Length: 429
Image (cartoon, rainbow, N blue to C red; front, side, top):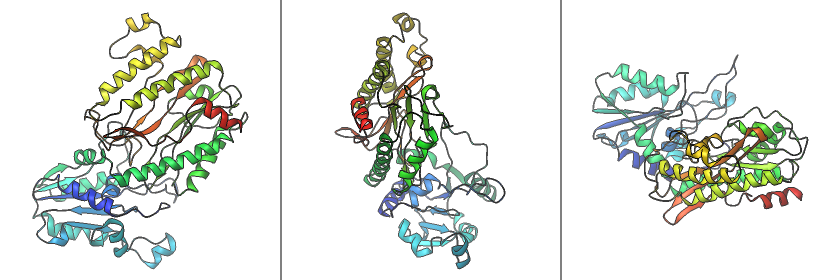
């Protein structure tokens, strides 16, 4: 890991909140992600299971967490299993956590080697009535590969078929939606690193630069500031490519007169940030580009103001849609007849603004949470309206990360240049 050590108090409190949500006499189990293979003897970089990290802070493979609040023996209420390390592993792979280090990271006093998990679980599980297993329950999840979590759950249920099985995911979704002060600090750090990357680009972007060269500037700045890198696949889309919502090729030349849509952000300590900005390649927006840019910015500011305690995302999205509808009429992209004849399930504005305005942000860029739950203090959302006009080779999206507080929305990216005049001035320096 590149990030500075995180106070174990975060994970201790997270486990306390999780344990309080379990049914009486329940064991809950969580397992780390795989290191996924590529080809030959190659492997992808390790990314920890978000729920396991949330509860332990452990950032390595072959890790298992057992929580049993009603265990008869106090040392069995929380047990962490980590990969047994050795001098050989340290030589070939780098040192893994020993038991004392795992305790320091997680705050869990009972730490055992992972190769002893099966025997330990068998000695304990027959005392419990319920077993909570975790799973990646996300509406946008499309996974065909069997994950470590899937294999683990299948194995547990096959060995102990008569227990009552419960889902941890609904509890985790509820807990993770509300960020603690520690988590806000980590996400703010990710936003601060993102700001450094973006400011680096303001003096770099010019006609003739390649999209992948911009990507290289960002990864350099992110990693040198203790980030693992991008929080998600970077979108560096110039000209017409900006109208492709998930453009990731990043292989075209940036030409004078075009606008680059940059949906790029850093992670820090496994927590994501999520930013979108638009830059004129030659440093100056055309009057039409500026007109569209300012329209999106007005919607963004108004939408941000609506991310308040008590609101709900479906109603919020409808309100943002009405704001965007007006802007599109003013831009000459929609007519009142278009609006009059629109289908309720697909409003006319979606021709030019077809995605949602906000999503949860946290350990995952599209973080877990219930969109029908009333917005509460401590939630963090993106705010990212956009207008996409393929016939004009122009796509404008602007995005910041917003913390909901009792006093109103707090913009975690308020220091990242956003106004068109400021961007043009900084690019001109």
